[in-house]
Length: 351
Ligand SMILES: [Zn+2]
Image (tube, rainbow, N blue to C red; front, side, top):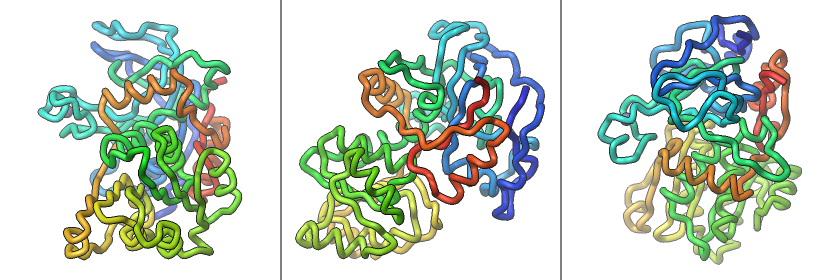
């Protein structure tokens, strides 16, 4: 089968190690598994981290990249009843064992053996992918119909943003949220979820064109974090009160300003550290202001079912930035690496 693979990782130049090549087919599905003929796969910042080399033991090379995807069920293993060959499905790229104490408690993204497609396991930018049937959802029928690119773009960011905003930060309609870097898929989806909840949303970007689009998509207030001092602007806007929730995935570059923007009792929720993982925290400010610092990664099976249900209602339809043919997957990576996108960058695997 054709696939986009890394032939090595590391050194900050991982994209140079990408190749489009023939690899052995994904294995035939075992009990509880399905094999999917992938039509489109979406990239995430995770894919850039994987290309540059994450801590821990590297995967065997060539390593198939990509977490998100959508396609048609090609075959199913024994004891699979929820889907059958021919069904159109999206992938939930977080693989849990469904046996550990966290899984048994319904918290699948806390699984002690949690693994991600494209990071710990062969990924989605390939003609065939084999994974547990737990990890697919039928693509809802919408008018107009979801494109393969939209279906591929849905799972990772929507699940991540939902858990952050709804489950972890518990954003409510009367509250205000600050969301950094609206070009990113999680940030853009978090904004749309916050608006769905009825909250007021402030977003930032270094790109005025992205801010204008964010406004069309529902942002109440926008700041250019390159030309404006976000913490000062937020404090002025809120009459020194600050915002209830800050949605973070930037890390080192924005952390201090995120804390300056938090109101008393505020919650900072983070799922990433694209600018660096080490930050400072004055514990006296933490307890005096009753802040909550919340970590979040992906989401559980109930949350995934809920976001798929929302999609079926016509909500949270993905925003696709662009679609690249498989043979040009590296160009898709480069657009993401340069942070040029607004919404999801998608690779068309088969037409
Ligand atoms: Zn588990």
